[in-house]
Image (cartoon, rainbow, N blue to C red; front, side, top):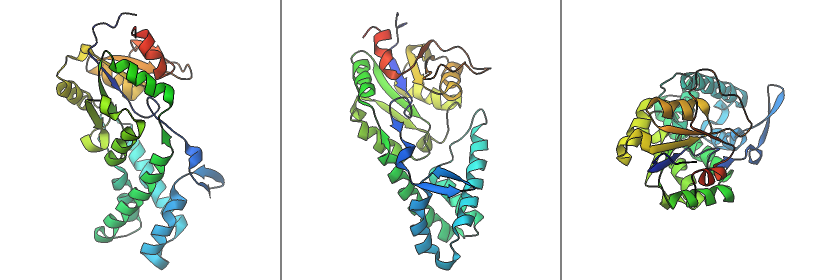
Length: 252
């Protein structure tokens, strides 16, 4: 396939370069089912900070309510990012903690949670190899929806190919989330390219395909399970099942 004069390839992070394995999270029985969650890792810190005021069930209910509120916001077409820290701060606020107490505790919970998320996130070797092959010809950038900037950058360092990327944009740092067109436009400006000179690669039809096509980029959709393209999403320029396929399609 011709590369259409691409000068850069910009990649999504999760389920594009890295995969996170929820089986590495603790099991929790809640609402009559088993869930994989970092919550049991948070309970000792909450118990230590709150003492008799800590109620496990109340915390889980407050956190679920905060998460559902954030998830609903993310469904808007042009969302801003609500960080992991903000999520825990909202949770503690729902429990009645004042800001001077909630904010330092929210930061402690963020740290514990993200340490485990980082620990269960890995870059498969075949995807790392694909990134190295792409770098032979193209400038590389990364644009990720992720609610913790520090951990996003740490995960990129863990891949071993961080130095190959000239631009890394994490939504928690930028302030907006895909598919908001402004976050894509900022990538274009920072790479000093025209939209059509960039191939954007990601696994989420709405965030990655719609988001990039709205600003004139070309899009490669990683459709691992052969899912039909959702209604209202423009046709991607390429469809692949894994990042490892892309270098070959681009003649590398």
